[in-house]
Image: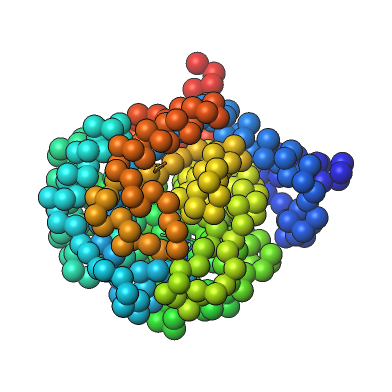
Length: 358
Ligand code: 5AD
Ligand code: FES
């Protein structure tokens, strides 16, 4: 349909649409126009990143969490998960293995586990930076005070992932218990930005009670925040949560949002997530072909992998770090891309343009 094509072209050119236009796009796009949108998004990523895919080594260092989010498999109320914490030495071992495999970013992710003090986190950052000065550190450890975030940043952490999950108040309430608030979440993201982190927001696609209007609010929130990274993936139920019987999000809808986000934020770092690879065996490849430019294979020791199940049937829980790295290498090559041995920092638009001129 010509009208839809011009809407997609407008999104590409202006990097935003009105609420009404997004609604039209999301509710009436045909299969053919979806292919056109994905193609535009893929070309946009190509212009900025060539055929290089950035990799991040994910270290899930604790599955203890004080929160009780209704969707999450490691929520506090789940008594049927074996809890673990990696020691600093184990974490350093993961980094060592990862460095040998070509990772130049380590993502330290965990539940909100009060056992690690700010000093522990700072010490960990110091150690990793001392041993691997050529690497970036990304933290993904939830909501903390401004002062804590500042300490991490001053210790040398480069990036911070904190998905906002949904930008709509009512929807946020339906996904989280009373003690968590969207206002607080947004404040954390603002603080992280102000401090100077490269910041990652994001949301689940197809989470319970989500409407198209909510998703449009997510797009508006992201436009306003202007994050360096955006992580999205399909919602997938976990059998030990209140959402055990809810429907999954789909690969198709997730790909659609990856493409829209790529056109909105042409130089953003957008991962093709493990959840996408879980909902479909070729999901991560499709994510790249829809405009994503990052993959985040797991570096956690195999013995703890299956205990970090945020949702059921998570892929790669039985595979060694090296296996995942080589598997992804092959998967990316098959679709014409290559994993980069690079920190893969966010680059402002001007730097990109310069690169293209010289
Ligand atoms: N399905 C999909 N994604 C989930 N996450 C947590 N639980 C689920 C689930 N059941 C996502 C959240 C969180 C990130 C670490 O994982 O968006 O921010
Ligand atoms: Fe882990 Fe393929 S990426 S086995």
